[in-house]
Image 1 (cartoon, one colour):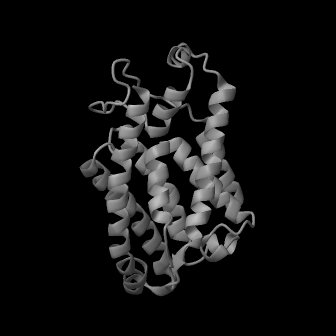
Image 2 (cartoon, rainbow, N blue to C red):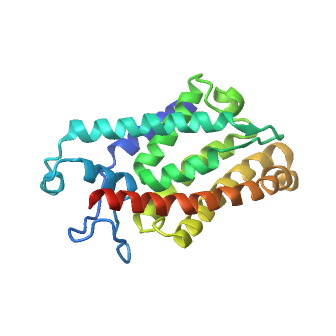
Image 3 (cartoon, rainbow, N blue to C red):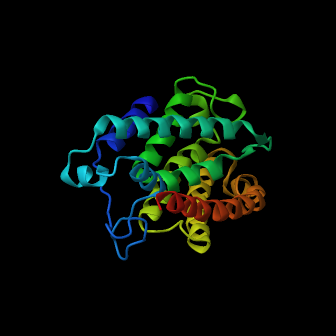
Length: 240
């Protein structure tokens, strides 16, 4: 049942049309209001595609094979990074400290809501099918439905939220990156601790599933706040 739900989510993410707002004068500048702006990976793809790529996309005749191949590679790389970051951990009970939070939030912000969500959903599907990609080489439905399951599904929700914030122009400067990362972390904490409370109670869930991670996550936020603006400067520099 859970595998069908994850598979259905992946199909939905793939079938949803991707809308990108393109400013022909400055494609990386944030727009105001509800207008969407390209996320980092879209901007990078625009930079490496042929010079008439943007015109092809506007005309609806995008070279699908090249574009889809690039995105498929991003999904593979992203899921591998998620699996690798889960193995570097401090073994606290009931929730181990790993580098996954930073990777999840960066994937969401750089990939966008659909590609980022699809990447995390792919990672969850890999684990549910028996690949040892969860923390401590864990895998299987039991892990997804166990005490840490809320955090795993929180990763999925947070990646989509981060992508939506990135489409609104956040993540290009230190302050906006910090704000976005705090929001993404809050999503993970709320979903993770709420699910954990079903196993050990609300008070213990807060004490064991949130408080021990605040210091480490604060350090991760500072790292992300430096990485995202730097990545945008590098991409813009390569486009000149």
